[in-house]
Figure 1 (tube, rainbow, N blue to C red):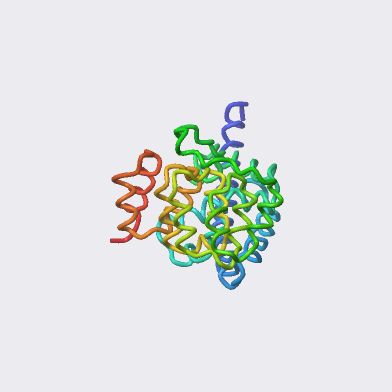
Figure 2: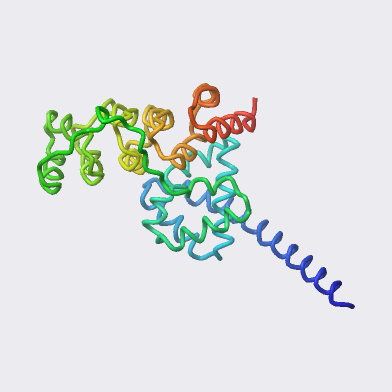
Length: 263
């Protein structure tokens, strides 16, 4: 056997072994969804997901994410129930570390997997006019965080658009905060991309459908956050985004999701 034939044989063998690993990962994903579906607490579910990814090779972990995303895009009910809050780079960095998440993104990008867009870096928005920028408060941030914990309605109104995401993260846990308040922030063009991402990473509020819609329609929401929310939207809202979003990536993904859903 000459060198070229040997190389071709080795390449065919590698392709076969990769196909076997991908199929095994697909079956593992079935079992993983069942396990995650039995965990009610979102934080425990996230850590169980991270544990699963750590026990796989970088390629297999990335394929798992890709397979979950594929099942989400076809509207699979169990995937929609389980995956909200899992396929989020901010959460995964918290439990896996930035280096490992970057490795997963690299594999997905090399494969050309659509789920790679979920890990794209956030681009800071620079298109606000001066009169749209919220004035920076004069109090120290520690003092504002302390105020954000107090269940006083006027403080909630005052701090809702604070420029520091630590204040936003604190106020989202304020017992006086209402869904109307969160939707107001999620829909506002005055909100920073970082603040909108904090809302998306809050298990309590991102579970609310009006919050999802507000974030998905806000052009300031980071693109990867919007793409991650689209599989959870109803068809009528996807149609509006497919027809009217200012971002071609959102229009394209919304249209793709609509075409992949039954009926």
